[in-house]
Image 1 (cartoon, each protein chain N blue to C red):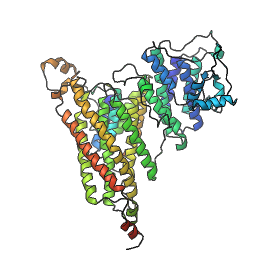
Image 2 (image 1 turned 30 degrees about the vertical axis):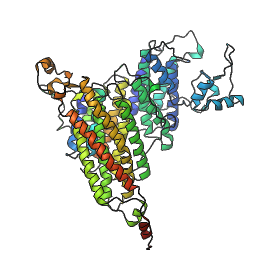
Image 3 (image 1 turned 120 degrees about the horizontal axis):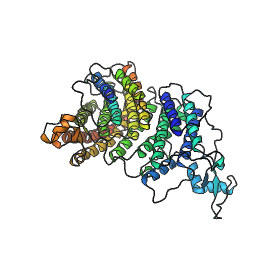
Length: 105
Length: 505
């Protein structure tokens, strides 16, 4: 679940096109904040036989959708509900950004 | 048919809350008020009518009661409850003497304690001014109504019918279980309130915002023991007057209405700065929060740059120059360069923190405030996107003043983070994946198993310097922005005012 969020953040970073002031950079930061809410222990990048989502191929929305689907399987707890809400908001913000013209750098 | 258990009803409510999250069905004020009232009734039933604290009770017991008592003035009082004069005043958000005056005028019936002490005891029905608010209609298919119905069923389960003392008390026995149930209920409330906020007219949105903020704070307070908790329960936390002494002002921004957007942005900046200050006061703050503060600083500067770009490329006409101060292009260019340089430094500082962690999760109030500010800043950037035949000068000037006003708060947060960086390192409260540091014998096992180890300064060689640079650069930029703001608010000279009206001396 957290791997999907971190992949979404990495994809958002790629969408900035290197522009520091791109709204995608700020969105990546929000995605990471949600990921830290679930697991703050900074998992190391995957290596070896179990490749995680590859940021260079996963669009932000698809990674967030995978995260949302994974969270749907989570048992009913206060924290799970909050994470579901946060990911839903992130998907909505991503859709809004995707519909805007590319932001200048 | 067997009676459902509290756990089963709570699971149903959780499922309905998840459905609410993905629902686009607009909520009405009536549906919200029914939910709001049911929520309070449930919390009252859960905590227990007439519950008081004793000095010997542990902190979780105090937290439960304080959380309940911090509920924003309920729409309707708890049914069957009795209140002293002071409790009634607090319940209604009125001065005690005003409630006492109503009692003397016979507008509120009272009775005395059985012990004969002269003390006014007021029944809940005497204080109920909103009998029009009724439980959600069981046939209402709206997700919020269905959620209200399930919480109402849970409240009924916890409330013995007709004061039947023989009925078993099925409320949680242990206060830790009570706190856990309250947390779950308040998590549901937070989601419901924020969903409602997106649908109600702005005039009706204040109450859901109050409940959302209350729930976020309460979720953190009732969280199972975590060393990052700030000292003291909710009563020790600075509930800002804007939230409770004065109701928060909800905003529905419109990019076409400068004042609304500017107002929203100002509010979001203020809320975020306060939430960041509180998050940094935790015993062990979350590194996720520290990083997000730095990157939010970049976002703030991005919006500032958008304003400066507009002011630089659309020189004001004579008429508008009469009404607003006009900084020269050289000053604007200098400030813009510093804005970009500072943003770069802040991003480097954020990157320096990316591999370390205190293993503490960000608190709900900060996450909510950060999300709100992100939306406000993004809308600001959108509103300032260049459009043909559109003069955004006035809007840009208004917004840059708002952002300049927030610069000292950002600088203050960075000063705190700068101090925290060395404190956390020296206290061995920063951890890093063993695989990310140069190999050494004592962490060989951790490298093989992928575990975290205490971060040493040599493991994060850029952390302290990058953070310190971020602080210095932001402090310098704050001075420049304040000077720019002073220029923008300077009244033009008399000569310019006369010239605008076609007069010469």
